[in-house]
Image 1 (cartoon, rainbow, N blue to C red):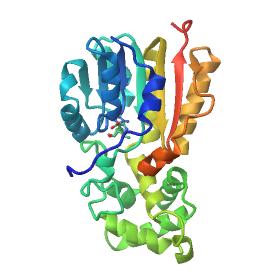
Image 2 (image 1 turned 45 degrees about the horizontal axis):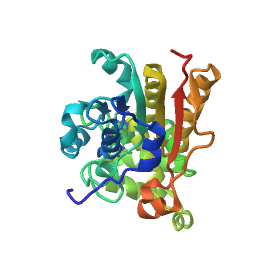
Image 3 (image 1 turned 90 degrees about the horizontal axis):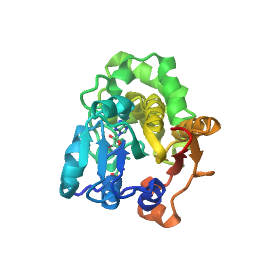
Image 4 (image 1 turned 120 degrees about the horizontal axis):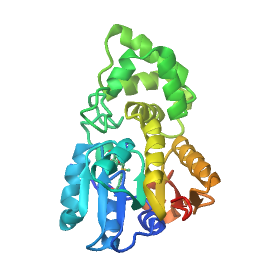
Length: 301
Ligand SMILES: C[S@@+](CC[C@H](N)C(=O)[O-])C[C@H]1O[C@@H](n2cnc3c(N)ncnc32)[C@H](O)[C@@H]1O
C-alpha cells in the first residue's frame, strides 16, 4: 500500500477560506492522510494547535508519521467527529478559531484491497471506516429487508435500479450469505439490464457508495458534527466543509442557512466553490467536490 497517496482536494481554496492565523486553535474533523492538517499547521505556527479527528485508526497512525515535525502541536482523536462537543469538553477547550470537514473516504481506504470499499478488489464486504464498530456492509446486505436495502441504495446511491438490485440481493442470499465485494458486484451486474450497464460509471459504483454511507452512518453524523462545531466557534471563527455528495451538500447548506437566519453564522460562499478543471484532470476524486464556508458572527458570542 505504500505507493498509494491521497491528494488533498481543493487544498488551497479550503485552507484559504479557513484562514488560519498564528497561534489559533483549529479542528480537522477528517484527518485522513493529513494533507489539509499539514497546511493548517504550517499556517498556525509554533503557538498554534490542531485537534485532529479520524474514526479510522489507520488514518491516525499514518498521519502521525506525516505530521511528525508538528507532533507537539497536534492532539489526535480517534473518534467520530459527531462527538466533537464531548471531546472538546474533555480537553477543556471552550472555543476554537476554525473547523474543517473533508467528507467521505480517503484514497487510502478505497484503494486498500482488504477493506471492502471498492468493487475493483475482491475482499470481505466490510466498508467500516472504524474497524471496531459493529456493523459491516455484509451485515446490512444479509439482514436488511428488501425494502430497507432498496431505500438505502436509492436514497444514498441515487441508483435508478435500486429496487431491482435489492430484489436480486434478497434472492441470492436465500442460497448463501453474500460475503465478498466480488459476489455483490456480480449480483449488481446481473440486476442492471445490459443496455444500462454499457454507459456511465461502473455499474456497482452507486450501490457501493450507498452501502458505505449507511455502514458509517455518514449523514446523521454530519448534522451532529456541524452543529457541535458551530457551537464551539469563537466570534469570527470559520467553518469549512468539502462535500462530495448532493445529500451531504444539502445538509451543509440547510444548517448554514438555519444559523445564518438567526445571525449566528455569516455565509462566506453564496454559491459553493468547485474545483478547477486542472484539479479535476490531475485528481479525478475532486470532480464532485463542493466547498461551503461560514464565519461565526461577533454578536453570536
Ligand atoms: C476525504 S478523507 C480526508 C482527507 C484529508 N483532508 C487529507 O487531506 O488527507 C476523509 C477522512 O475522514 C474520516 N471520517 C469520515 N467520517 C468521519 C467521522 N464521522 N468521524 C471521524 N472521521 C471520519 C475518514 O476515515 C477519512 O480518513
